[in-house]
Image (cartoon, rainbow, N blue to C red; front, side):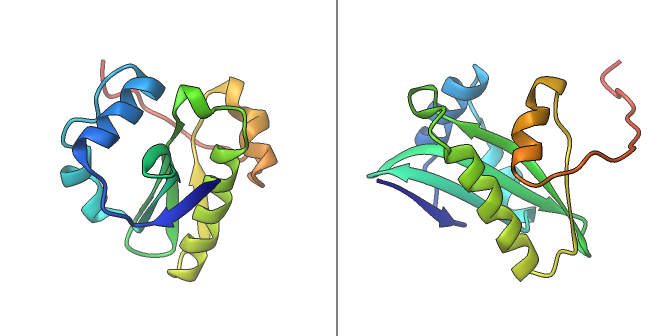
Length: 129
């Protein structure tokens, strides 16, 4: 049975293993650098194994942002990511957010629509160039 926890302590090795499976590279200092500034973050566990994650960043006010949704390759297509995002929305609301944003690549549109997101107009600048 998969259990979801809000703001759990995460071991760097566990987060690295999940990141490697989901993104192809380690998380590095993500837990120390990013999570302390988050509104919340949620993790999915199979027993003691970290198998899923989502971060809820925020602007310090009423806007929150879903980031870094991922599930270990061995556990994908079981509804874990959907459960994480839905629970993240509940937690964001409980903590005072009035709007929840997400950016995603086109192939993820069906997933995020299924989680309750609707399309909006937005702008983007690629600062890596």
